[in-house]
Image (cartoon, rainbow, N blue to C red; front, side, top):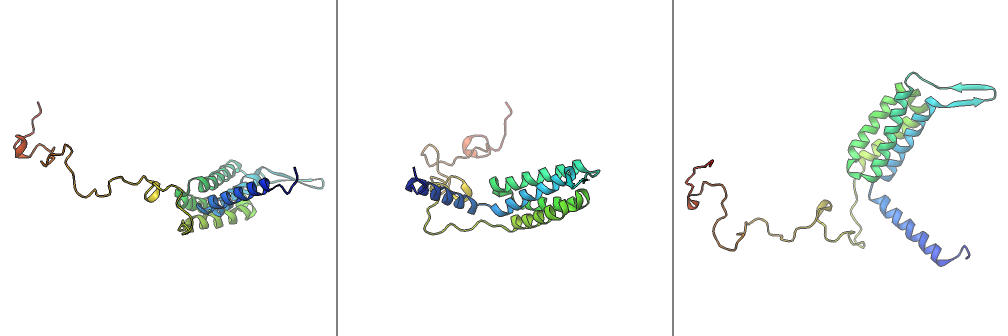
Length: 187
């Protein structure tokens, strides 16, 4: 099988187009920046860098805080990919965690994690879902707005009788036609 097999090219093109469609429906780049921001913030307090015979340890008293901030940023980045409806919360939380990482985690992972979290959080807050192109059909044609199922009866403004008789369907117990005359009986 050669590298120029048409099936392999078609498969790659299909997967690339599927990934592009998936990426376009969510704040992908914001999630990537937030995810990547957690790595230097969590890594540098625990890293031992070797420069020749010199060992440089960046351990701080708040190493656990740095780890927690880094892990939370990674989780927020992944949640931006798979739960796009939490984009505003995740964006604001990423910005706040970036600001907290400055005093806690070696100036926010030597400003690398701090800047990535700020940019990713701002992108997440600013992201808005785009309109579907006119040439593409909807993924689920039987859904209404927001992914909810579309109603089968579009006229829901008028109550229709259940049993087909044109009597009012009053279940309050205060209608004189049902014999209660406004009295509620407990027994």
